[in-house]
Length: 250
Ligand code: SF4
Image 1 (tube, protein in one colour):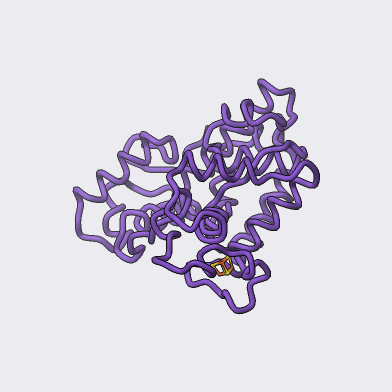
Image 2 (tube, rainbow, N blue to C red):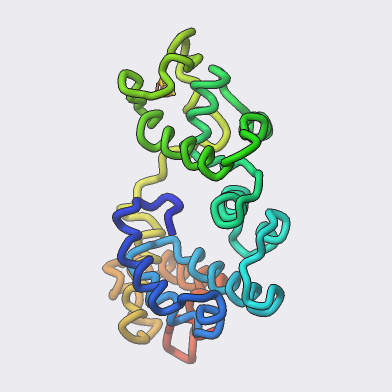
C-alpha cells in the first residue's frame, strides 16, 4: 500500500482493510471484488490483485502463515526484493538489509559519495548491517532517508552530517542516478492510470454497459478506453459479462 503512496493516504484504507481481513486466510477466502472495493483511494490496482493472490498462496502453500525467509517471500506474487527483505527484517528479525529509495540516497551520499549501481547498493547495504538490532538499524536508515536525506537534503540538522562523505568531500549529488532511487513519476492528470482509477471507482458502485464506459470516464477516445478495458480484463482486475463490465469476482 505504501509503495509510491504517502502514509496519510494509506492510513484509512489500511484500517478498513485490516478490519475486513485480519489474516491472510480471510483475504484469500474473499472474492477479488471485495479486495478491490477496500482498495479504494490507493490506485495501482494490480497491487490489490497481487496481494489477493499472495493471500491465496499463503493459505494454500504455507498453512495460512506468512513465511519468514526472503526466498519464500520472494516467491509470492507482487513481492520484490524490498518487500521481502522488509518483512523478513521487521516481522521476523532476519539479518537482511532493507534497500528502498530513501536508503539508496543515504548510501550514495553518506557512505559512497558516488553513484551506485543496484548490485553495489545491495552489497554495501548488506556490509553495513550490525551484528545485532538489525531491524532497528534498517528502520534508522529508512528514517534518515525519509526525514533528512531527502531528494533535497536537510544537511544542517542531519544527525550523521559529521561523518557524511558527500558533505565532507563535496561534488555532484550522487543520489539522483543511484540504484533504488526512484525517478519522478509521469503526470497523473490525463494518464491511463487516472482512467483506470476512474473505471474501478465506477465499478465499485455498479456494473456498467461496455458501450457507455468511454462517456462515463469523461473521455471521447473510444479506442484508448477500449484498450484500457482490454488490458484490465487481461490483468484480471475486471471482467466482461456479455455487454457489461464488472469488477473481477475471483
Ligand atoms: S549530511 Fe546531508 S547528504 Fe549527508 S546523510 Fe545527512 S542529509 Fe544526507
